[in-house]
Length: 311
Image 1: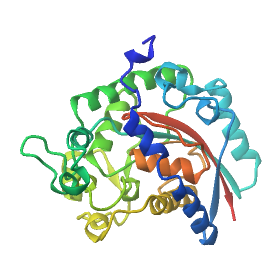
Image 2: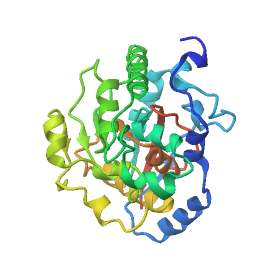
Image 3: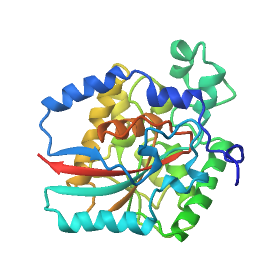
């Protein structure tokens, strides 16, 4: 692909809103996390990917056509992460996260079709008798094609020296699981781990309610589930209101705390990690580690080097 309009991984205005609206919630999060008792504090390493540069326009940049945005060869990036992990004390750790958003889902179409009544009606019911977008909607044909474009792109990056992630984590929503399975289907990977807290914003929207654990296990026999993963979607059932953006940031901070504390079946050799999730979840990751706000298209991926320092 030689031109941006030949790629399916192109952001639109709704993607931009997902990444940049309600910036006051960033300040609320910083106030809350300053008061919280946490093991690790996180920051983002700059100078390795174009996505960290203020000069990069997130509405025109296309990682699939620009070598993932790398500013240095993959060999240098990976060796630098591993050198730092080897040479610095155990109170500091580094990981390269490949944060992937699921491809277009049926709910993405429905929210546009019924935009004027989405908040008041359609997000609660999950179907109009034709389309079904909740609970746990599927990828659209376009969404699957976006994942297939990433599969080809990732194959090329591996050939250029990008390491295959040693750990794969995924949201329990079907659209994320299917995206991950398509994107990495051409290489041998470790068994992905389903993590409940990698889901999209909790509450109200029926499209964010997941399937039962037994249904997921029957459909995806190559997945593992984190310890204590409940049969029913307790996070959705217990929610009395839609999760606030800053609350989602706090939730994802908890995921990172676990990741760097080795509670998600990780270890010190896991320098490169794949996480497949959702637009709001990726925004939360970026905000928690201090990365600039960046628009992620449906099906998009952003690489982020995270530095964790023990309190």
